[in-house]
Image (cartoon, rainbow over all chains, first blue to last red; front, side):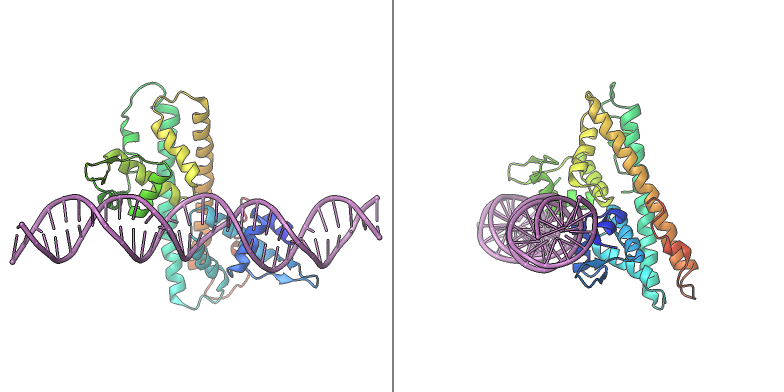
Length: 130
Length: 130
DNA sequence: TGTTGACCTTCCAGTTGCTGGAAGGTCCAT
DNA sequence: ATGGACCTTCCAGCAACTGGAAGGTCAACA
């Protein structure tokens, strides 16, 4: 498929997809006309990138995560180590998002709007894992 | 406290803290010597920024989130609207992280390393919410 | 009291990760 | 065969830092 369709399916702008190729994250085929030709697996990777970037992983971290996906042999131990480190990071992010959710919900529904300038939950804003 | 201590307590580099001041996210006092002077509430905000940036929110989104925290009057309806939008985004991020966790865990423990080049979970990598 | 070293200041330049726009080639439907 | 929607490369600009130079401040210690 052409870049336009890959863009639509992955949720990434064509510009970004070309950029990811520039920095070596994906390698689409080329048609005889010079157009990039994306396979289904490329779209998977692009969606994966779209997500993990949106979740606060750096491009280099995404490269590592993609390598986990691509390294089907799973030969090296450090690849596994990276995966386990990432698992911990993901858990932390989930915890932090959950806490942020509590804080925000509190902000919207409970505390504010009426009074209480020094609600303890808001004072402790994002402190719990400090 | 000085910027060094604020940095240590918030987890943000001093450089970034100054940058956040430049773009109007925080406004520390100044001592007679010209040094920035951070209060506890500033550190709360910095930690909050450190987290929400790390979770994939843009600086402008963080500005909105901070506004929710600061706008103790909670007068405007659109502030509440913003908060509710952010709650939905947070829920989506939590879902995506959970899915990413499953995928990664699968990668480490189950599928790979032995055989199965086309494990269905990996083929569906980050597709579930497409 | 001087001076050393760790801190702070501003400013300017460089990096990362895109993003927009120009200039031009391709494809296909009328 | 031509118009519009696609694609290409290239170059410039923006967002969000990040590093380094040049210099001021402060606390301690000889």
